[in-house]
Length: 497
Ligand code: HEM
Image (cartoon, rainbow, N blue to C red; front, side):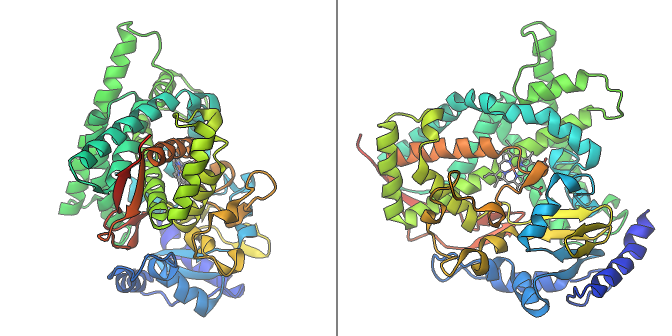
């Protein structure tokens, strides 16, 4: 199978794509176009941006800009031995992400390899039947009524964060790097709501996962061929050691939950995500799918990771946008005082915060934390007139779609939340807007993330007003997710209420 994946299929793919008039840069032996991508990116991201503006595609996807100009909307390039088609036609994307193709497409071997030691085969990286079973096991943890029961924790964690901001301001430290606060807060919330574990306990897990993420991200730029990941290099040893340590800590959390149930202190494993996963490990299955201990740990890692970083980035970018657009900050604050009257928002009130919702959408459009969607065709598939041969990987550059002048108009790079007015009523941005992907394999945590973000922003905005600090350096980068390279420094001013 390896041989067919590495030597035969690419030749076939090349032929099928050429026949359809899909071209791209010439690949080099073994490295494909990795060197061009790396050197273009090194050039565009070596400096900060000269001002806070949002035209970031040429900075973050310079290869996309170059090749889409040279070869057209659809082009093909090579990451090592893996051929990729870049797809921006939203009708075709819609079809690809629909239920028709959930079994015929998924995460590629290369991606699975790159995250093997990071989040393993948890939901995000699973395919086919494995994915289907996992998705059905975890989905109930993110239903509306479950989410409502988390509001209390979310508010409590946010209050603690606000308290620590207040203490800082009181001793005269009015400038803070808000990204760090958001990252800690969302980590705290996912630990408490889904694992019933304190932030301190979870913190070490997050730190280790972050280091693992960085190491594994490096590997996606390294040359990869079958077997190379098991060489005992320093790099591989480092990854192994971190992985062992994360899993040891997770076992502690898992073990203590199991003991709680087994010594009879509680009647079940609990009904948060960890409890539901543990219950699943006890079930005997006949259909060949087994939820074993390794999968349990992979799932925990997956949710520790997906459950906090992306949301923290959404919050951080939104705060940067509000800090640089004081009129929108005022608008949202006015709405908050009208709807919530100075109180902590309830789940019912959250849905009435339309200005806040518009601001969050606009932030997700300009700075989508997950800026690319990767898929691979496991069979030959046909998207309209486009044939996608088996083994071709498909890259959907969400960031480029969100910044497409053709789709959004001349003011595409401007911060204009009003473009989302009426979303959910008469106006649907449809597939021009896909920060959480779409179809059956969309973000399972979307409602969780949005509820959490609204609570945090609402509480922050009613306690403080803020401006961007002169120390803020606008330098967005993509390291798996879209981040501000040096964080977001803001100056806080407490509001009297
Ligand atoms: C603003 C915050 C978030 C954004 C922008 C975001 C975005 C996304 C996107 C684009 C995907 C599809 C990835 C792909 O298929 O390649 C995804 C999947 C996923 N997300 Fe999120 N996410 C966010 C928050 C969360 C939260 C809070 C959780 C969990 C509590 C979560 C858990 C997951 C999981 C488990 C998947 C994999 C789903 C599957 O493959 O079936 N996400 N997310």
